[in-house]
Image 1 (tube, rainbow, N blue to C red):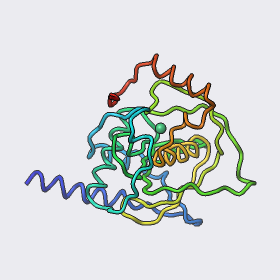
Image 2 (cartoon, protein in one colour; image 1 turned 120 degrees about the vertical axis):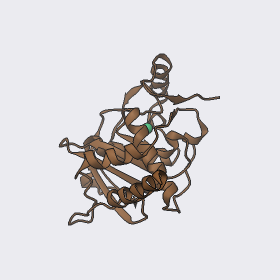
Image 3 (cartoon, helix red, strand yellow; image 1 turned 180 degrees about the horizontal axis):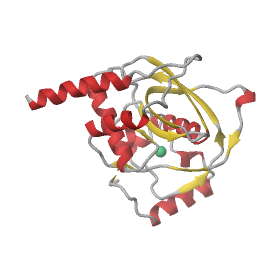
Image 4 (cartoon, rainbow, N blue to C red; image 1 turned 30 degrees about the vertical axis):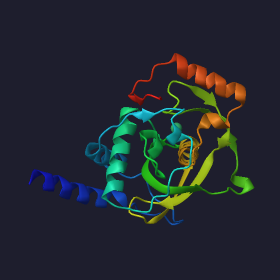
Length: 222
Ligand SMILES: [Zn+2]
């Protein structure tokens, strides 16, 4: 009985939180009730340790999501729980060892608006030249713990994909959130931000990682 209640609650809560409203331009509105939505996912989920650079699952393209079922809902819940434990602003499925194209985010934008959401099968859209301005802020990654490096990326991003129910979605972001959308999509194609650095900067980031101690559980590499 208790089990069934939990299942029903899960089904109800995930049905409520999965489908976001859309604005006039067709972009999801992912800024409303962030606190409640993030908490609902996280509280249903179980936090899992984070994979780190060198783990093969991070260095190859993940599989497309084709089944938008309860297993996917549970994965998304676990990803929100893990993201919170690691104090991340975005998390890709392969960062908890799952070979599927899904990422979650809980990230502020340029105007300090909080965005919370889920994207399956993300594709970054090419920007028209007039929207392409590079920002060279610092970037870090839960899978390269304790390291940071400046990396130039466009300060605006649009991602197309699907929500966890399989509905087509478009997400856009500015500032740090634009960086997050690009960073998480890269993960699902097997690329880490340090792969975009110069050889010297990459080495420096790996040195920082070797000298630091992560503040959250990680999966040891063989
Ligand atoms: Zn990352």
